[in-house]
Image 1 (cartoon, rainbow over the protein chains, first blue to last red):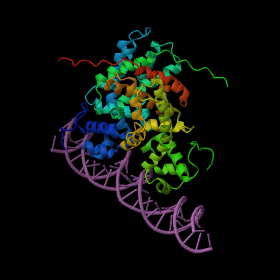
Image 2: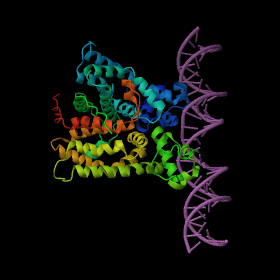
Image 3: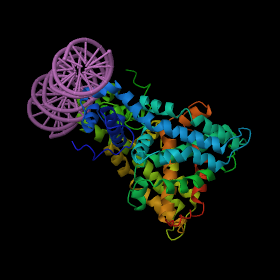
Image 4: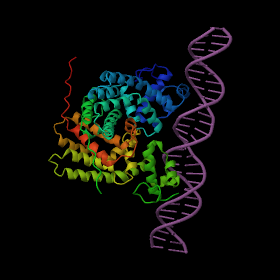
Length: 225
Length: 225
DNA sequence: TAAAAAATAAGACGGACGTTTGACTTTTTC
DNA sequence: GAAAAAGTCAAACGTCCGTCTTATTTTTTA
């Protein structure tokens, strides 16, 4: 009804396909892929149900479109930052710069619609539906392996298991911050305010760097029975 | 059909209500609350559809029952360990012991059905459906505040924001490990094997302890415009 | 302005969902 | 062994789902 009031997302023109993207992003972020119906999305977007099919064919490809709109520029930014932090592949880059290149764009995202998308992508990486996770992982495949390669270069002394477990901690913290479920705020008695990207980076980088800089975890020798 | 082959969960007798619990746990862990229908659960359990209503009234209360069966003993174990690590509340407990008390039981869980439940509870803490998250959070309310209190006692010098962000990292890593989505394994080129609880603790404890032992993050001074 | 293309609309498709009913069967109780 | 309780069952309730068809309207093109 009100044409200008609730277009929170910046990109996408004010045509039906763009309004569908915006509405879908907002609703998927709140309730997840399977928690929202196409009907709800079209109603929120103020377009006819059939338009969703007309522009995006299926619900999953609408979801993919929502994701691609944000992830593709975000990945470009991550790659650019990583390139800058690691111009010479034969030399080890600086750990903090690599972490910033990898995590920074995912926290900031490229517009004020970031808050919504951040939540969505945090949710989706552990979405119970396999097709959702696969869609999301696929879109990160362009950057994530390079990040792992950089970490390997920084710590060639780490075994595969050590690398794996440090990655789990880094991804876990990153995804949890992005999903922003409000639980930690509830537990320390603070209000659940939107993530402040600058503050997030100020904490995340040293915390995650400290994990990665630890000496290798000695594997427990096979115990004698 | 085969009575003894696939009773993965230890507790719950082999009666319909127990078989429902087992089937529900397995299926919820695979596909999430909204990804499984009551019909699928009853079929997997080999009981009539109406039995689900007879024993548990609603799908959500079946979910809650699944959760309570594991969480209540797990919380008891966490409380016991925390009590042991922190007998005198006026003294600061040892950080690693507190982390072990809090995280250990969630990784190990009390039976070989732990693998299934671990995934389920990792998934559910970021489930898109609010009623699911609330159910889960509610069950952790008995222990989580005590854990935060212990952390405060260990580091009284930390400001609220520092505590908050360290909590986010700790919870994030813990939940990510429990959800075990296989992504890190994929990225480092290792097979996605079930979590080895001993190995998990060997890595998680020093990693998360190192985060918590960092000096306070200096808040950036309010910048002049 | 006529023809072609694009967009929008209403509605129905078959199916799955959570939940409930009411009749039937088994088990328990005395 | 009769009465009561507990458990099981098939069937249906109303609702919502993703998708698609077909018709109509609007816009573009020539």
